[in-house]
Image (tube, rainbow, N blue to C red; front, side):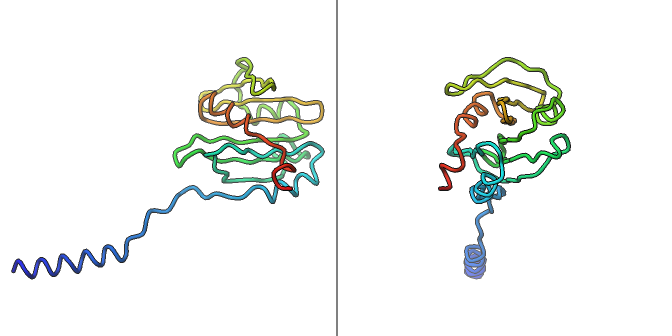
Length: 166
């Protein structure tokens, strides 16, 4: 009887080993660079891409939002890990208060962050933080649900897409 259990156990072990599949990574990464190259040809501002190691892009698009319309928004979003934090880049010629509120929420401005030599306005709600840079011809808004350090690291990694895609 003991031999039968050993034989059955060995067969079960072989079946389990042969059918084992490592769990799939639930984060579906994309390559935003090809789209960024196309957007660079259309956008009237320098298009940026995040280059932060560890950040994994999961979405990219060039389309108007409800409040930016008819102006398109360059959006690249992603995560640092399966559980987050999330961080995204939003660039547009839209600069209206309604568009900015759509991105940063209804939270108040809470001060400034200096990333490199660039000054960003901070906004915070109960579930996200945002860094906003208003330029003469466009806006750059970084949004995330991590810490200020996470968001500043992400903002500091932004590089012109044309430098990255050739």
